[in-house]
Length: 307
Image (cartoon, rainbow, N blue to C red):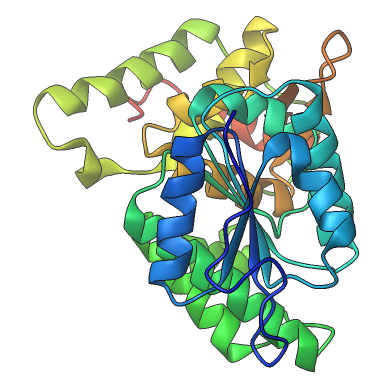
């Protein structure tokens, strides 16, 4: 692969300027795609192959962000790079963006657990720009204040990023006031969890999909509920759901689905479980609290048509 280091200001650049963005790409096409976006946004970019990325990070004293632009599996070098990114992001060394096709998401999420890593699936230029702006804002804020959770500028950028994915309003409610949107209901007097028919859940899912034959599906975008239904169906049928399958079930763009998975996990509704037979895959399932809430919800609505 012909992928030499490329930078708009040299490998290490002018020390009076902010540190460069390190781009790790899986092909020349991926390198060009990410470099054009970074430089168009006014940032210096240093691009290397996935194979060379860990060594480059060892040499780089500081970086504004690390951007993984992936369009294919890179085997062990990719695993090592993902592990390095997970570790360094967790220690606050840099923010990270990972762009990939959907088939690679299971592998990526088996190694990336830090919620601050921005995961984008086949992103549009607008989504890329929003993610890059957010990453740089996080980096700049962390230099001024260790805890950036209350930084107004960063909060605004995250809101913009979420709006690009068409879930900003609801996601903001979940993020800022999870208690107001909690799905768990009070314990019934008996404390028992009522059984739910698998056929009933499947009928609800089918009914929701039929709407798309008559209306624009974006009118009914509700990825949280669609994912809850899918995981509930899987729990009843004793099937496991990988991240990539749950993204498809959400019926929204995969990047949006990933953000919802992250949000629902943070809120305690979903939980991750490693595949015991394949270390490169992770499953998502309902938390015990969410499972109880879904059982009670279906028991309460009874035979009423649920869509």
